[in-house]
Structure formats: structure tokens, C-alpha cells
Image (cartoon, rainbow, N blue to C red; front, side, top):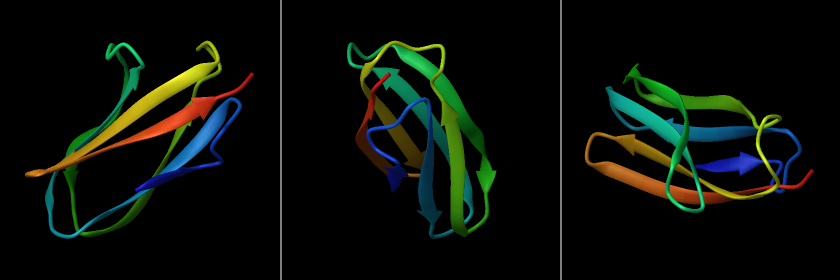
Length: 82
């Protein structure tokens, strides 16, 4: 799972892969842990996916995104530079 470009302004794309059909959630958080957005919350079949995140209404800084699929969870950083 990775976003590009990173740093970004104001749109980034997050690519991820799912090994088997599962409920997938992809959420964005600020550095304090407050949830900013839910980009995905649905059952996905196995495969490669990408989703865009538009942060035009957010301040510059570091944000976290968390992908959960079944028992798998991964958190990554992304930097918004305006």
C-alpha cells in the first residue's frame, strides 16, 4: 500500500491490494488521531485497487491513512504541502 505523489497538493492516489474477498476500510486521520475521512468501507474482491484523496479543504501537514482488510491492518504516512 502506498500513496503517490507524496508529498502531495491537494490530491493523492492510494494504491492497495486485497488477497481475498473481505470487508475493506480505508480511513484518513490527522496527526492527533482524529478521523478526517472514510475513503472505503465495503466488501472488495481480491485484486489491485486505487482510490483518490482530495485534501483541498485541509491544512498542510502530516496525515495517516489506515487500511483494514479482515485481520490485516496497515498504517502509512502522507504529507500535504500547500
